[in-house]
Image (cartoon, rainbow, N blue to C red; front, side):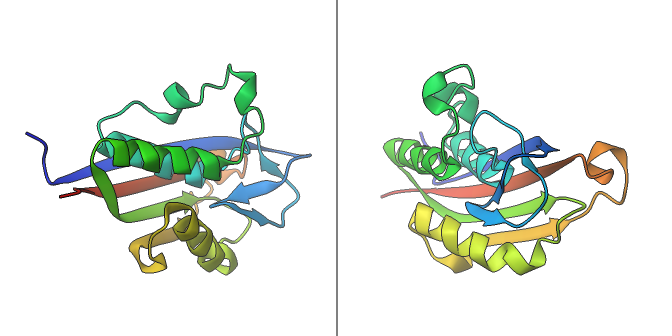
Length: 162
C-alpha cells in the first residue's frame, strides 16, 4: 500500500571555481566564481531533484544523470528537475511543497531568492508560494565557511494523486 504523503530530503555541495557562471535555482547570479561540476552545478536544483526522487522512493540524480555520461556534460539542471518531477508523477505523486536552504558565505542570496522561486515554480509547474528558499552562512566554519563552495538542502512533500 502506498502512503498518501511522502517526504524526501536532498543535499548537494559544489566547489567554487573561477571561469564558470554561478547558477543557483536556475538563475545566473553575478559573482566572480561559479560552481564546479559535470552539469551546470546548480546545487540548489540538485538538492530539490534529489528530495523529489527520494520522496518517491527512487534513486538519486546520479542514477538518472551519471557524471560519467558525456550526454549530460553542461546540462541545465532545470532539465534534471523536470525529469525528477516526471519520475515522481510516473510513480503516482504530485509535489505539495518544497522547502530549501542555501549555505554560502558569498554572494548574498537575499536579492536573488524571489527570482529563484519564480524560475523553480515555472520548471515544476507549481505555485511560487509552495516553494521556500532560505539562505544562511556557515559562520566561517570549515570549507563552506571559508567560501570554498556552496551547499543546499531541500525537503519535498509528495502527495499521492487520486
